[in-house]
Image (cartoon, rainbow, N blue to C red; front, side, top):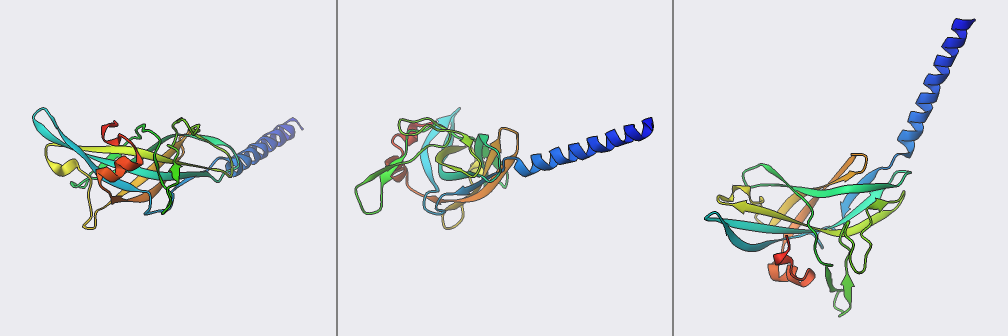
Length: 203
């Protein structure tokens, strides 16, 4: 009888653990990432060249408009939102987000000014929250810089039509990752300065 009770307790413990695991997997947060209006807000541009230890340096800015959605049943914060690009030499380079002033621009043909949030950054008009509630999304622009010193092998691989492919990688507070491919179109530095004032001196 004692052994039967012990086996019953063990069986009930296993069933309870499986039920808890089922609820956890069902209710866990699940972040996804995508570009906002692909092809319209994802740009790259050449930054002013410089010099380091007698070698010419080249810099490239990347501005992305990112949407992060939580399709799970629990709220969760994201802790990083970097991108990965492929260089001319075929290697991969990870770029980390850089703080910038609030981006802004005119809407369509009108003179109305639209101010954009910066992902994960508190600004005069936005809180910069990184907590994504269940069934909700967070939008924001993010800025990255790739540099290349000496030979041009570390610079981004640019297609014939001026595109740079990259992968945006999001990581939540539990270490779970989400990723999505972005395609950046070339813009002039002057155009980027109209969107983010002083971006050439940022970072």
